[in-house]
Amino acid sequence: MKKFKFLLVGALALSLAACGEESKTDDANASTEQVEIEQKEQAKVETVGALTLVDDLGNKIEFEATPGSVATLNPGMMDILLELGANVTGRPTITSDMDAEVEAIQEIGNPHEPSFEQIAALNAEMLIVPPSFQRFAATVEATGTKIIYSNMNSVDDIKTTIEKYGVLFNNTATAEKLVAQIDSKIAESATESTLDALIVYGAPGTYLAALENSLYGDILNKAGGKNIAADLPATDKYPTYANLSVEKIVERNPKVIMLITHANPASVKEGFEKQMKENAAWKNLDAVKNNQIIILPADLFDNPGTQVVEAIDYMRGVLKTAEEAVK
Image (cartoon, rainbow, N blue to C red; front, side):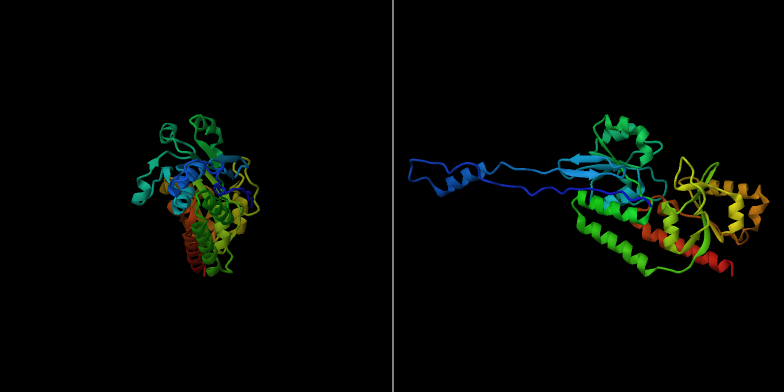
């Protein structure tokens, strides 16, 4: 699991100093009030520090003060920012139900299909995006918006992100509380179960197995499941995923197969089941025989942010049901 170090220097304390000597006057009757006014005028000289953020690609971004507006294309990051009280002016496209606060935020697309027109119109101080957005960066930076890269591939990454932006948005108290809640919930519900499971990322025509170094692999581990694809070779394009090896999957016989998809879950499941029917070996899997092919809800698993505990609990429930099905 790759951790990214961060450096965030908080705003320096304002230094107020009287510059100059007290006004000399021949008027012995000069009022004390007048002297105080002159001293306040002299005390306007201030030294203001800078905020330096190191993003998850190692880029250093300077801010003169706490950002007044931020946009993001990551649902989990949006969740974190809102919890920290940041002024979120642009959000990703969300197909599931959302509350009024989120719905009121300007939609700006997704990392693969951003709306450059809407991003430019927002004129947010910063835009937080995944590393895959790099090919679009120049277009956005030309508008004056600073690009910040965020990559949350584990629960620890999520906790680190919360802490980092808690400092940036001057809300470390809330950040510490959120991280403590995640740690507490995980500790409370720790389990020794090691049920064999397979997590598949699905898109029409594309199916990949989630590895241990993916967020979903880490959630599975913390939920008490055993990832049968853990040692499969990563793909060049997606280093946290592997191509499906039917031979290995059949050999390891997962008791449950969980599908993750960002859109069209019904069609993705239908396509996956069709692919399995085309290979007779799949039908002998316990997961198939016991009807344990489960679609994980995108609103909870698509970059969960502070809801990662709920995602772990949900997956733990899936594992428990699958375990009972094979008894």
